[in-house]
Amino acid sequence: MELNRHNIMLALVAFVMIQPIIDVLTTASLLFIDLPLTLGVIIRLAYLGIMAIWIVNESRKSKRARTYLLYLAGLAVFVIINFIVGYTVKEPFYIMQELTYYTKVVYFHVLLFGFILLLESMKKEDGSDNARQLINYFLIASLTISVVFIIAHLTGTSMANYARSKEGWTGWFYAGNEIGASMSMLLPITALFAVYKTTTTRKLLHWLPFVLLSIAMLGLGTKVGYGGILIVLLSIFFGSLLLLITTKEYPARQRVKANSFVSLLLLIVLIVATPFTPVFGNMYAHLDILGISLEKPPVELDADGNEILPEDGEDEEPLISSEQFENLVFSSRETYKANYVEQFKDAPISQKLFGMGFAGNYDAPEPHKPLKMIEMDFHDWFFSFGIVGFLYMVAPIIWFAGSFIVKLVMNLKQNFNYFSILTGISFLIGIGISYTAGHVLTAPSVSIWLAFLLAVVTVVSRDGDIRPEL
Image (cartoon, rainbow, N blue to C red):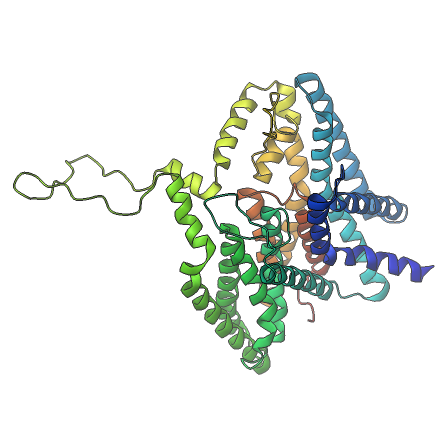
């Protein structure tokens, strides 16, 4: 019986690493099979149900599990209130789209609590190395994504990431934003594998998974992909410089020196290669769409051939206005946000407290124009679930992330290492993408990575020691 329980727990945790395969199956079902639900939706819905059952089962014998179950029950109450408020206020009211959105949103919370309970149980029963599980599962997933991109490129079957103007490819993955966000969170953990395996500069082969995933991310042509690579390499380089100050043992110093060298080398390669990447051309394409020219305007001359200078108090017009800069960074999301702000101002007090539901107080959409979210997850949470609902939903993230930071700071000298640096960067990248580009906390295929990552660092740091033996 105990063997079966352990196998079940292992299977539930190992489900994380097959996410890229599920995403490819989702693409296949969208392109070749006429189903009301994609295979990915069916599989992930089933997994959500199994994890919920697991939490309920654990609550019979665990006080912590009962606390988590109580929180989820409260979340269900908020969803029900939101549904009732929306049903009475919104006209029209699209029930299926509202229910679908609820499922996507609660996915993160159910999986976060489920993973914590699973990892705690496995660690207690057989001493499972949760940190090693994190690295292994994320590494396998990143290699799977890289292989898919390579095969798709070599066979000429890669899907385009953009409909027009811009360049970029998504391999056999249907949603470019979602696979880009997933890759950005996987990359730091792939780097974690590399830095622990690279004890000298002669062992550079361990960086190959990182390099392959980075190439795939550059192929996407997105700012998120390029920024993710840059942030990870900078974090390793400057983190290594700080570790050199605190690390005294010879073998450990050799590892740190080797990784500082490799990260600097890859940074130089990235900078040199930047003009040849899709994201570089896409930035210019975006500027062109906005009507922005980076060329200096021609000099105006007076009748005597002298340059006409602006009069005192007259400022030269900037090359890029603040509105254009926002559009360049947020890709029109700021326009949708402004619309939601106006809706929220006009909404009744019930919606201000408990939210406007999916897509705000929408009108009947035009043909072939689906209802739009802002696609900035925290903003979507706020407007969808209101002030009270938003605070309730972000509370677990703040609590678990805050606990990790407190334990890190309380013993910073011992706990400041590659594990804390790169898991922290992976989490910050996930949260950063949630805030700026979305498709993390409202996309089950992506939120599973953030939930598993946060669960692992929570369990690993629970005793205050963030120094896993890797």
